[in-house]
Amino acid sequence: MKIIDLHCDTISLFLALKGGKLIANEGHFDLRRALQAGVGLQFFSLFSPPDDSGVVLRRVLKQLELFYKEMESNKDILYLVQNYKDIETNINKADKIGGVLHLEGAEALGLDIDILHLLYRLGLRSLGLTWNKRNFLADGVEEGEGDGGLSRWGRQVVKEANKLGIIIDLSHIGEKSFYDVLEATDKPVMVTHANAYAVCPHRRNLKDVQLKALSQNKGIVGITQVSDFVKEGKPEVDDLLFHIVYIADLIGCEYIALGSDFDGASDIVMSGIEDYANWENLLRKKGFCPKEIEDILQNNALRVMREILK
Ligand SMILES: [Zn+2]
Image 1 (cartoon, rainbow, N blue to C red):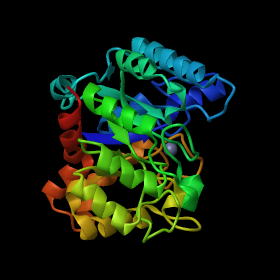
Image 2 (image 1 turned 90 degrees about the horizontal axis):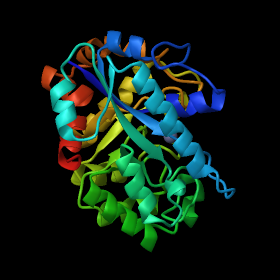
Image 3 (image 1 turned 120 degrees about the vertical axis):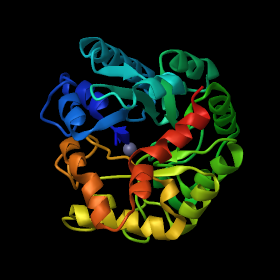
């Protein structure tokens, strides 16, 4: 069973570090370990800290170039997911990993829909409307009670993403904005990296009502490895698995996927992508049946992508 992971920051980390190779490195994610662990599809995030200096788009474009170079160097393994057929053809091949390009925070768009179209042409298939801060589209979790919701421009971007076939990612978004997007979208959404607020009350986690709304939208949440979102102190894998058990009891296994946030935070629960090799086992020990395990590791993510990617 090939594993799908909905979020890693490896490419943006390479830009920050001014170096790094996808095939093998010392970080949380590389292609060699991913293949060994049975990973078949990985979302790669492009991220620039939001600022008003006008360089956000430039930083995103540099990460795209970096990704394309890495894809050329590893073309026997890594392919770019542009439509659902790419996944169908390759997902069960032992030596292939699909890369889905994701933009974390839509600041790079400015107020220009042409930039979204251009990024789509360059391979972008997933869009996080906000990072933690307020932007032209909506408000991030940092706004808290002050969340003003989805703007008119944000609504336009959601509609256009639906039309183009770009996944909307609601990680990092504020609560009011979260519900506004669920109303505005005609497609299921992903919250690619978050856990359950009832288990660990961190602002980046989803409250029970949000998880229920997500299931009504037929969307999915990617369970994340970031220690702060799992439990206070030094959480272990078992603490992370408890988030899955909790969410499964609340809304069912059909809405759960994996979204590690590898290379996006220094403290994570697993040591890296290699530990996914053991996850089928770990979930079985928690009492999940084979169908539920397949849903969590792969099928739920495939279902959403089948509905959105052309
Ligand atoms: Zn993130």
